[in-house]
Structure formats: structure tokens, C-alpha cells
Image 1 (cartoon, rainbow, N blue to C red):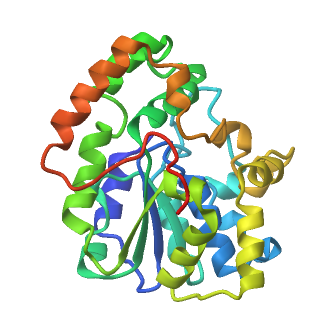
Image 2: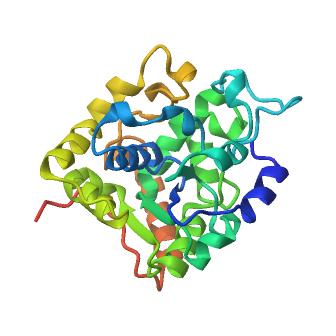
Length: 289
């Protein structure tokens, strides 16, 4: 799905000072955060968002001649088949990129202070369930088909994008104090979306009026995004429909899938991997203060 050519190009990508890179582990609320960013930049007016500038996570390069992808991966029209890292060079500022690139593969200029990164963290149990439901129908790996075999794979470094722990802790440990990084938690966004919108707006240097904040919040609820994204012409417009990116969006949905034994095993793994880290995740929504 990602070519060597794309990865090499991204490492030395020319980052603009006003670039915005929405970065997450898969199924951590990527499209949700991108929609918040887009609407903040548009003052809450969706009609001012150019969807054609964000058809796919920008490292994807699978529309090249001779590429082979499963039939159940959404296809895009010919004008969107140029690798997005190439398309992005001509986009007007501020550019918004969404990516699942691990820390070591992100453009080097970001770590020199160029651009801004909105990084979303989501608890690993809910991600496991969401990822399984996303991957299972795509049949990319026989181990994705049954929950038990997927769970075993998910607890290793052999899962897509490496383990949740490796991916997130590399960013958190190295960049949590960087001025051009904003770390948000999915669970906090679910608990208090308005505060998250204000955080994003302030971080981007785009403070909003109360009315604009209301517009952004109203359009970034789960129900609103499902209704607006799941349209017949999604692929024609460059949007990925809700049927591909939004399932439940709940905090604590892992309880519907994990067995008692699996939960105990994962808790043990979590304690081992997170030892010494000050990153704390919520596996249920805490009451709003």
C-alpha cells in the first residue's frame, strides 16, 4: 500500500511553516481530527473546505501503473491517482496532511520546527476492536478474519504500523514538549469536544468566535459526520465515505469484544510496555469536571 518511493520522498519532504500534519495510529480518530482542523480553518463553514486536497492519507502511493490492490479498497478517479505527496506540492497554504507515518519516517523538517502536528491518541483496546472491524472485510491477512487470531497479532510488532505502544510512545517520549506539536486524546474529545476545538484553534493561531466554535462542534459530532460523509458521490468528490472510516466511535466498546482472559493478558502487556512512561490513557470516559 505504501511504496519505497513514497517513503523516501516523505523523509525529505519540503515542509511549509504553516503546514498542518494530523498524525495518528490507525483507527485513532484521524478523519475526525482532520475534520476539526478543516472546519477551524474554514471558520466553521463546511462549504469553504476543498475536499479534493485531502483524498487519502498522503503517504499512499497505490494508484501507480501496475499496482495491485484488493477490489474492496475504494478507488478514486484518474485525476486523484497522482501520489498525494506530489499533489501536495501545488496545494495552496495552509496545507492539511493526514498520516499514519511512524516517528522515524516523518519529514525531518518537522523536527526542526517547521509546520504543526496535531497528534491524536486513543486507548489501545478500542483501537484493536475498531481496527479488526476495519481490516476483516478487506481480507489482507488471514489472521484478520477471526478476532482471536487478530488479537494475538495486535499484541505484537507485526501488526500494521507496528504496535500501538511503539508508534505512540516514540512520538510522545520525543516530542510531547515540542512547541509545534499538539497532543489530543480521543477520549477527551468525546468527553468535551468544544474544549478540543478551542485547543486546536488556539494551537493553529486561528482563534474562533463563540458562533464559529458552535458551528465546528455541531459539524464534528459523530452523527453529523456519518450523515455528511456517507453520500453516494463520496469517491467522486475525493472524500472517503463514513462506511469506510466511521463505525461506532465509542469509548469502551472494547468490552463487547475482549474476553476476560484477553483483557487480563492485555492489561499485563500494557503495564509492561508503559512502565516508566507518564502517558496515561483512559479506557472509559471520565466525568466532565
